[in-house]
Image 1 (cartoon, rainbow, N blue to C red):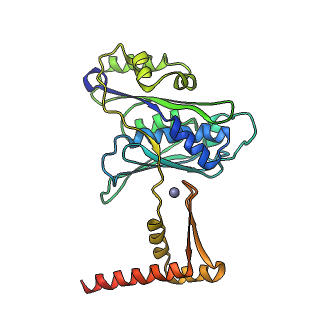
Image 2: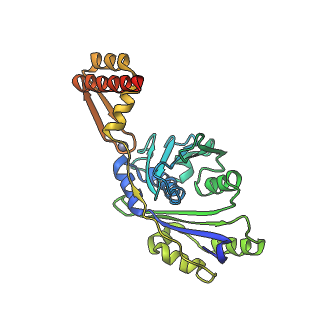
Image 3: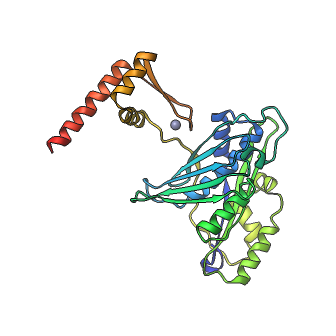
Length: 290
Ligand SMILES: [Zn+2]
C-alpha cells in the first residue's frame, strides 16, 4: 500500500502456477507465453476474494491462433485455465502474445459473489497483449486506471523459468501528482520478462517503489487448483436428464466426462447412472413431501 492507501502496488510470482498449466495442457512455448499472462491476471484478480463461494471467470476471445482462453479463480488465488489450442505454433520460434490471443475480440470478466446477479464487465481488446487489455478493462469497467506489466520467461527445455507481474492501481482519491510519479516509476521498470526471472515480489516492490511511503499487506499464495469432482460431474449428469443419459449409454456403453481445466476424466457405467438417478429421484420425493 503506497502513500497511506492512495495507491496499491501488487507484485506477483506465478511461476509454479503457470508451469503447472503448461504441463497439464502440453502447451507450446508461444501458447504458454500468452496463456500464462492471462492466468497471472487471474491470480491477481482472485487474490482479494474472501468467501469460498466467490468465483472469478476471465474469458478472452480475440480470434488468435490459440483460440479462446478461459481462466477461473477462487479465493486466495487458486486458479485454473483452458485454451482451445494450447499447441499452436508448436516447434516454432516463440510468437508475439497478440498472435496467439488475437486482437479482434473481447475480454469478459465475471465476478460471482454468490449474490443474485454476478458482476459482468466486457471490453473490446486493445491489442491482445494482455497488459493493455486488462489495463483498459480496469479503467473502463472498474474506474481504476491501472498500469500492468506481466512477465514470463521460458527455460531452454521449454519449461517456465519465471512468470509474474507488477500491477499499480491508484485509488480514486489519489492526487494527480502521485499518479504522475507512479506512471514514471512503472515506466522505469524495464523488461518484465527479465525482471520476473531475477526478482522476488518483495524485491520488485523494494527496487521500483521502495522510495515511496509504503506499508506491506498480507501476501496470498497462488496455486493451480481444479475444483472439478465426481460429485460435480454427477450433478451435470442429473441435469442432462435420464433420457439423454440412457441414449449415450446405449450408444457408448458408458458415459465419460472430461475436464478441460485439469484433463481428469470421470467414467459412469450403466449401473452408476441407474444408482445416481435413483438417488436423485429419492431426494426429489423427499422434497415433495416436505
Ligand atoms: Zn478439473
